[in-house]
Length: 121
Image (cartoon, rainbow, N blue to C red; front, side):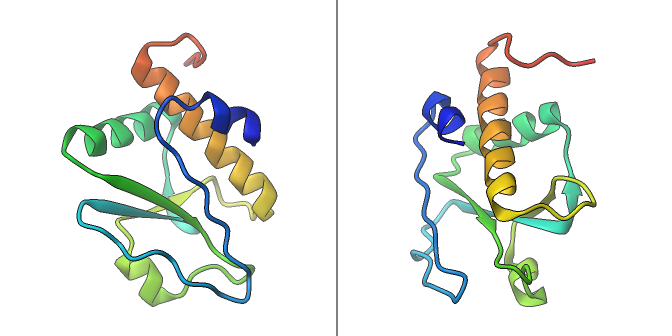
């Protein structure tokens, strides 16, 4: 995961909270919340990149990607999210989900920069 995080060309911060709970920093204006959730939308890499591009170009200040605890998110948390994102119907361990998210963020920023890392088709 660290390999991809280092290569992402945009400002990025990772905050990890204990499974027993914790307090997220307050949401500022222009913040998008994305919950990784098995019930979420499955986006291809190009679609994910386009979504990030749209947020960037419309003045979004911050995008927060949240990975839930072992039992996932409740209905109230899902309702407050701007996007529910899924990496497929399978259940993934947290460590793998974090690595997959980091890779997709790197891939998306590479696509938007015109870098040849991504190969479609």
